[in-house]
Structures are given as C-alpha cells and as structure tokens.
Amino acid sequence: MILIRRSTPDDASQIAAFSRQSFYDSFARFNTKENMQLFMDGPFNTAKLEAEAADPSQLYLLAEENGKLVGYLLLKDSTEPALANYEAIEVSRIYVDHAITGKGIGKLLLDTSIDKARELKKNCIWLGVWEHNTKAIAFYEREGFEKFGEHIFLLGEDPQTDWLMKKLI
Image 1 (tube, rainbow, N blue to C red):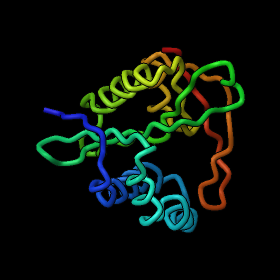
Image 2 (image 1 turned 180 degrees about the vertical axis):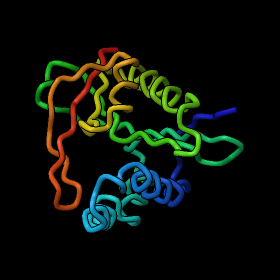
Image 3 (image 1 turned 180 degrees about the horizontal axis):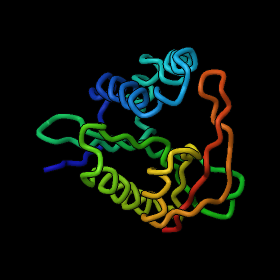
Image 4 (image 1 turned 90 degrees about the vertical axis):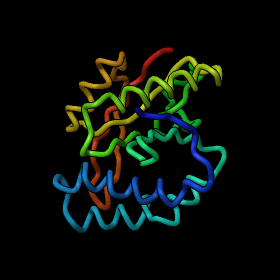
C-alpha cells in the first residue's frame, strides 16, 4: 500500500538523494554527461536540495511503500504571467522510482496535490514538462492538463523547451 504524507525536515537528505537519482534516471540518456553534471552541481546540488526540503514553505508530498520513498511531488507558490488571473500553484517536481512507474503512484501524488491546492484556496495548478517527454505529457493530458505556453529550462548549458501546462481546479 502506498502512503502519501507531507515531508518533515528529517526527510531532506532522503529527498535530495531521490531527486538526484530520479532526475539522472529520467534524463541522462538524452543529455551530455557534462550538462548533466553541471545541473547536478547547480540546481540539484545535494546541499541546496536538503535546504529546500527542510524549508517549511515548500510542500513536499512523499509517496512511501513499506517505509521506502518511491516518489514525491513538490508544490510551490509561484506563477507564470499568463496565469495572473488565477490563484495558481506550481507542481515544481514530480518523480516516481523508475522501477515501479505505471503503478498509479504519479496519479496518486497528483490527485493529493490537487486536494492540497484546493485547501490552499487555489483554482489552478500548473507545471512545466520537457517538450520531448511524450509519456509525461500524455499523462498530464489524461489528467486534464492543457498546454498554455512554453519556457526555456536550462540543463547545464543546454537550453531546452518546457511546455507549460495547467489544470483549473
């Protein structure tokens, strides 16, 4: 059984390690070793991730199975100019252990995040997803998200295009 819970500061190092491994597993085959290393040393620096995960203003939802972290989602109060007319919240990250993808953990995390967004009086939830991540895009579309724009995501020194997707809640 999968348990979803909010993180505590004690989870920070576990979230950091899971983040780095999940990002690497998801994107290393599509990027150069140098750009992956630059990204891991920058935004995915372990100390930075631990500080972020320990910050109570960040809402990390952890998915655990038998006490083991198998996925997480990060909700952040941030917006894009195109969403200025909404009370929006961002799904900044969502990662599931590659060994068990397709078992509904991502959907459970996303559903829980929508419940949390509603509790926070939000009427829109949004995210950015790499334009070539067709599997993730198809998942978000099945969940009712629609594309509303694009922005550049810098992976190391490689500018990549993310689709911006939103769902009214």
